[in-house]
Length: 377
Image (cartoon, rainbow, N blue to C red; front, side, top):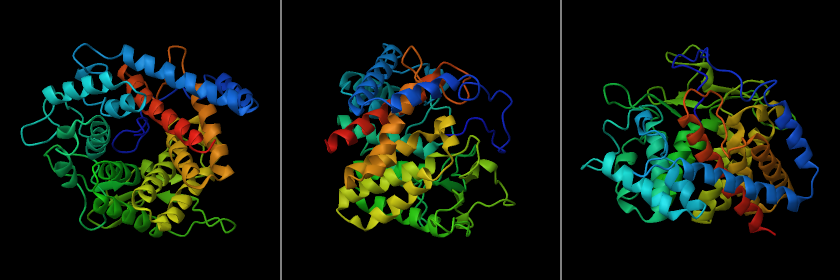
């Protein structure tokens, strides 16, 4: 999830305020505390209800032409085929694929054109679409798009360029979540070789962190989670193009990329399932440990969502109580922060579409979470 409270220079946008901070969400935290005291069966039932309510909200945003939300906002519905296919709404998933096919698919196998609009998160959006399209058999939007996605992979590190620049070139910066997004796409279409190179990047960037570990746990206090293609090292303060969003301070109470630990752990867990190679499990545990060691204040911010991705899949693999407990706690978190109409709100809301893209993501995470809990009754 992009930190939309920051502009391209890393400065705080003036309109960033409100929905997830005091006093607006104090009641939600109280609700979360009440849920945590309920029997597990009651908590799981509440999570199922939240998934259904979120799905119903999204179906209400599905237009007759197959777009979810306002198409003039750009390619913000890239996750819709994945989410709809997970929750059994195949018709909706196919409708969105049809809209994309008619309006954004170019003859040379790219997602582009006037309705794309957004240059940021370029490879991540394509990768996420590929996963959903593969799930519903829209192979022109999965297998067909994968060669273009692969063009964005850095031949040295194995990560993927984040953004398309104004001149059409690839950005210098890459990062953990967007590399993992492409890794999920590689697993979806059976390109284990590409996924292994993403895993190699996760190992490389973890090893490249400056010493800042807690001596008791070995977990970094600070993680420089962006990588420069030109320098082949993490982006650091003082580098051209560096912004504060490129570093996660695990003890800081602020909106930042809390996403990095959970999505890395989730991808690596899927890689273990795909290859049978449990050697990657240690690295998955390490990334999830970074997420679990973060300040409890991380749950004041919507970017904490991907932590449930990692814990859910690690629970599926290991059955360990620490992952089940966190998965349930994150389930309570989703339930407590859901609006009355079934949607969730992003950190910054400037348009109705902002509630669409975050709800698409949260419903996906809820489904993954419920599946993990069901995998070990």
